[in-house]
Length: 178
Ligand SMILES: Cc1cc2nc3c(=O)[nH]c(=O)nc-3n(C[C@H](O)[C@H](O)[C@H](O)COP(=O)(O)O)c2cc1C
Image 1 (cartoon, helix red, strand yellow):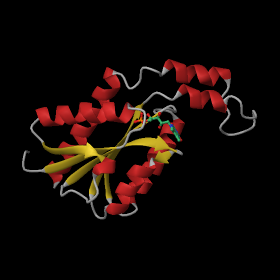
Image 2: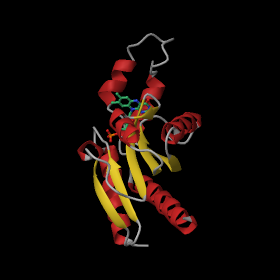
Image 3: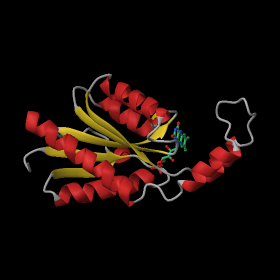
Protein backbone atom coordinates (compact mmCIF):
# COMPACT_ATOMS: atom_id res chain seq x y z
CA UNK A 1 0.00 0.00 0.00
CA UNK A 2 2.68 2.50 0.99
CA UNK A 3 4.36 2.12 -2.40
CA UNK A 4 1.64 4.07 -4.18
CA UNK A 5 2.22 7.80 -4.19
CA UNK A 6 -0.93 9.90 -3.81
CA UNK A 7 -1.22 13.69 -4.01
CA UNK A 8 -4.08 15.51 -2.33
CA UNK A 9 -4.37 19.13 -3.40
CA UNK A 10 -7.10 21.49 -2.29
CA UNK A 11 -8.60 24.78 -3.31
CA UNK A 12 -10.63 26.68 -0.73
CA UNK A 13 -11.79 30.26 -0.21
CA UNK A 14 -14.01 30.15 2.88
CA UNK A 15 -12.50 27.05 4.54
CA UNK A 16 -15.01 24.24 3.88
CA UNK A 17 -12.78 22.37 1.44
CA UNK A 18 -9.67 23.06 3.51
CA UNK A 19 -11.38 21.45 6.53
CA UNK A 20 -12.35 18.43 4.43
CA UNK A 21 -8.91 18.12 2.81
CA UNK A 22 -7.09 18.32 6.15
CA UNK A 23 -9.38 15.70 7.67
CA UNK A 24 -8.88 13.38 4.68
CA UNK A 25 -5.11 13.91 4.69
CA UNK A 26 -4.75 12.99 8.34
CA UNK A 27 -6.91 9.84 7.89
CA UNK A 28 -4.99 8.72 4.81
CA UNK A 29 -1.64 9.30 6.51
CA UNK A 30 -2.86 7.35 9.54
CA UNK A 31 -3.76 4.49 7.22
CA UNK A 32 -0.17 4.46 5.95
CA UNK A 33 -0.61 5.93 2.48
CA UNK A 34 2.34 7.72 0.91
CA UNK A 35 0.59 11.07 0.71
CA UNK A 36 1.70 14.46 -0.59
CA UNK A 37 -0.56 17.28 0.56
CA UNK A 38 -0.86 20.97 -0.23
CA UNK A 39 -2.79 23.83 -1.74
CA UNK A 40 -3.58 23.54 -5.42
CA UNK A 41 -2.39 27.14 -5.80
CA UNK A 42 1.08 26.16 -4.53
CA UNK A 43 1.46 23.33 -7.04
CA UNK A 44 3.30 25.24 -9.75
CA UNK A 45 4.57 22.06 -11.36
CA UNK A 46 2.59 18.84 -11.27
CA UNK A 47 3.95 16.60 -8.49
CA UNK A 48 4.66 12.96 -9.36
CA UNK A 49 1.93 10.62 -8.17
CA UNK A 50 -0.03 7.57 -9.26
CA UNK A 51 -3.28 9.10 -8.12
CA UNK A 52 -4.38 12.68 -7.42
CA UNK A 53 -7.18 13.72 -5.10
CA UNK A 54 -8.47 17.07 -6.29
CA UNK A 55 -10.37 18.72 -3.44
CA UNK A 56 -12.34 21.53 -5.09
CA UNK A 57 -15.22 23.86 -4.30
CA UNK A 58 -18.21 24.05 -6.58
CA UNK A 59 -18.43 27.12 -8.76
CA UNK A 60 -21.06 27.65 -11.46
CA UNK A 61 -22.23 24.05 -10.97
CA UNK A 62 -18.74 22.76 -11.73
CA UNK A 63 -15.16 22.98 -10.57
CA UNK A 64 -13.59 26.19 -9.18
CA UNK A 65 -11.08 28.02 -11.38
CA UNK A 66 -7.97 26.99 -9.44
CA UNK A 67 -8.96 23.31 -9.72
CA UNK A 68 -9.71 23.82 -13.42
CA UNK A 69 -6.18 25.11 -13.93
CA UNK A 70 -4.90 22.03 -12.06
CA UNK A 71 -6.88 19.84 -14.49
CA UNK A 72 -5.30 21.71 -17.39
CA UNK A 73 -1.85 20.65 -16.13
CA UNK A 74 -2.90 16.98 -16.07
CA UNK A 75 -3.25 14.50 -18.88
CA UNK A 76 -3.78 10.74 -18.60
CA UNK A 77 -3.69 11.05 -14.80
CA UNK A 78 -5.88 9.20 -12.32
CA UNK A 79 -7.98 11.79 -10.54
CA UNK A 80 -10.42 11.46 -7.67
CA UNK A 81 -12.53 14.61 -7.37
CA UNK A 82 -13.90 15.47 -3.93
CA UNK A 83 -15.71 18.76 -3.61
CA UNK A 84 -17.80 20.89 -1.31
CA UNK A 85 -20.84 22.85 -2.41
CA UNK A 86 -23.54 24.98 -0.80
CA UNK A 87 -26.41 23.77 -2.99
CA UNK A 88 -28.09 20.46 -2.15
CA UNK A 89 -25.31 17.92 -2.67
CA UNK A 90 -27.49 14.81 -2.74
CA UNK A 91 -30.52 15.78 -4.84
CA UNK A 92 -30.93 16.34 -8.58
CA UNK A 93 -28.77 19.43 -8.46
CA UNK A 94 -25.96 17.42 -6.85
CA UNK A 95 -26.25 14.85 -9.66
CA UNK A 96 -25.93 17.59 -12.26
CA UNK A 97 -22.84 19.02 -10.56
CA UNK A 98 -21.37 15.53 -10.25
CA UNK A 99 -21.82 14.95 -14.01
CA UNK A 100 -20.25 18.31 -14.83
CA UNK A 101 -17.25 17.54 -12.63
CA UNK A 102 -16.80 14.06 -14.11
CA UNK A 103 -16.89 15.51 -17.63
CA UNK A 104 -14.33 18.19 -16.72
CA UNK A 105 -11.96 15.54 -15.31
CA UNK A 106 -12.48 13.13 -18.19
CA UNK A 107 -11.61 15.67 -20.86
CA UNK A 108 -8.01 14.51 -20.60
CA UNK A 109 -7.81 12.21 -17.57
CA UNK A 110 -9.19 9.10 -15.93
CA UNK A 111 -11.85 9.94 -13.34
CA UNK A 112 -11.45 7.57 -10.39
CA UNK A 113 -14.57 8.98 -8.67
CA UNK A 114 -16.54 12.06 -7.72
CA UNK A 115 -17.90 12.89 -4.26
CA UNK A 116 -19.84 15.97 -3.30
CA UNK A 117 -19.78 16.98 0.31
CA UNK A 118 -22.34 19.37 1.76
CA UNK A 119 -20.78 22.72 2.61
CA UNK A 120 -22.05 25.98 3.98
CA UNK A 121 -22.63 29.15 1.99
CA UNK A 122 -21.49 32.68 2.53
CA UNK A 123 -24.87 34.00 3.73
CA UNK A 124 -24.12 37.56 2.58
CA UNK A 125 -23.85 36.26 -0.99
CA UNK A 126 -27.12 34.36 -0.62
CA UNK A 127 -28.88 37.44 0.81
CA UNK A 128 -27.89 39.38 -2.32
CA UNK A 129 -29.57 36.72 -4.44
CA UNK A 130 -32.82 37.32 -2.50
CA UNK A 131 -32.89 40.80 -4.04
CA UNK A 132 -32.92 39.48 -7.61
CA UNK A 133 -36.17 39.37 -9.61
CA UNK A 134 -38.24 36.31 -8.76
CA UNK A 135 -37.94 34.92 -12.30
CA UNK A 136 -34.12 35.14 -12.23
CA UNK A 137 -32.57 31.63 -12.09
CA UNK A 138 -30.33 32.77 -9.21
CA UNK A 139 -33.19 34.21 -7.13
CA UNK A 140 -33.34 32.78 -3.61
CA UNK A 141 -36.72 32.78 -1.83
CA UNK A 142 -36.98 33.19 1.98
CA UNK A 143 -37.74 29.42 2.25
CA UNK A 144 -34.66 28.54 0.21
CA UNK A 145 -32.60 30.97 2.28
CA UNK A 146 -33.55 28.99 5.37
CA UNK A 147 -32.00 25.84 3.83
CA UNK A 148 -28.69 27.72 3.53
CA UNK A 149 -28.99 28.88 7.16
CA UNK A 150 -29.62 25.26 8.21
CA UNK A 151 -26.39 24.17 6.49
CA UNK A 152 -24.16 26.66 8.26
CA UNK A 153 -22.38 23.97 10.30
CA UNK A 154 -21.60 21.83 7.25
CA UNK A 155 -19.42 20.00 6.51
CA UNK A 156 -19.92 18.33 9.87
CA UNK A 157 -18.15 15.29 11.30
CA UNK A 158 -20.37 12.83 9.44
CA UNK A 159 -19.86 14.67 6.12
CA UNK A 160 -16.09 14.47 6.61
CA UNK A 161 -16.26 10.79 7.55
CA UNK A 162 -18.47 9.91 4.55
CA UNK A 163 -16.23 11.74 2.07
CA UNK A 164 -13.11 10.10 3.52
CA UNK A 165 -14.69 6.63 3.49
CA UNK A 166 -15.53 7.13 -0.19
CA UNK A 167 -11.97 8.27 -0.94
CA UNK A 168 -10.49 5.22 0.82
CA UNK A 169 -12.86 2.90 -1.05
CA UNK A 170 -11.91 4.43 -4.42
CA UNK A 171 -8.19 4.35 -3.65
CA UNK A 172 -8.28 0.71 -2.55
CA UNK A 173 -10.33 -0.33 -5.57
CA UNK A 174 -8.05 1.61 -7.91
CA UNK A 175 -4.82 0.09 -6.62
CA UNK A 176 -6.22 -3.42 -6.31
CA UNK A 177 -7.08 -3.31 -10.02
CA UNK A 178 -3.92 -1.50 -11.05
C1 LIG B 1 -18.38 32.67 -6.68
C2 LIG B 1 -19.03 31.47 -6.06
C3 LIG B 1 -19.79 30.61 -6.85
C4 LIG B 1 -20.42 29.49 -6.28
N1 LIG B 1 -21.15 28.68 -7.08
C5 LIG B 1 -21.78 27.61 -6.53
C6 LIG B 1 -22.57 26.77 -7.36
O1 LIG B 1 -22.70 26.95 -8.57
N2 LIG B 1 -23.20 25.71 -6.74
C7 LIG B 1 -23.07 25.45 -5.39
O2 LIG B 1 -23.67 24.48 -4.91
N3 LIG B 1 -22.30 26.23 -4.61
C8 LIG B 1 -21.67 27.30 -5.14
N4 LIG B 1 -20.89 28.10 -4.36
C9 LIG B 1 -20.73 27.76 -2.92
C10 LIG B 1 -19.42 27.05 -2.63
O3 LIG B 1 -19.18 26.00 -3.55
C11 LIG B 1 -19.42 26.45 -1.23
O4 LIG B 1 -19.70 27.44 -0.29
C12 LIG B 1 -18.11 25.74 -0.94
O5 LIG B 1 -18.25 24.89 0.17
C13 LIG B 1 -17.00 26.75 -0.69
O6 LIG B 1 -15.83 26.06 -0.40
P1 LIG B 1 -14.65 26.73 0.44
O7 LIG B 1 -15.22 27.10 1.80
O8 LIG B 1 -13.61 25.71 0.53
O9 LIG B 1 -14.23 27.96 -0.32
C14 LIG B 1 -20.28 29.23 -4.88
C15 LIG B 1 -19.52 30.09 -4.10
C16 LIG B 1 -18.90 31.20 -4.66
C17 LIG B 1 -18.08 32.12 -3.77
